[in-house]
Image (tube, helix red, strand yellow):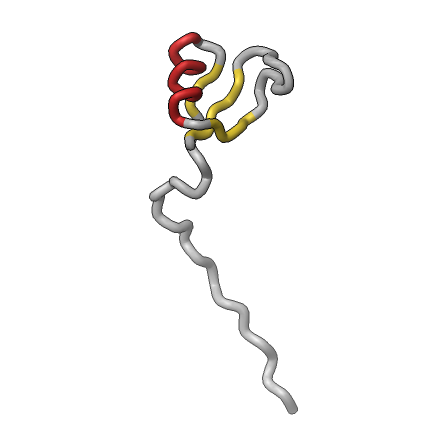
Length: 61
């Protein structure tokens, strides 16, 4: 399964929508220009952002 973003309206999908489709269908849509490949947010292997100061609670009296 691959994630693609449609570049034109194709019922029931509209241009700009992102959908998961089977590999064979994704390759056909990309080859014809009806869709472009889209990376999943879960596939990113970027480093984690720097963590700021940790939260400290007040001391109890």
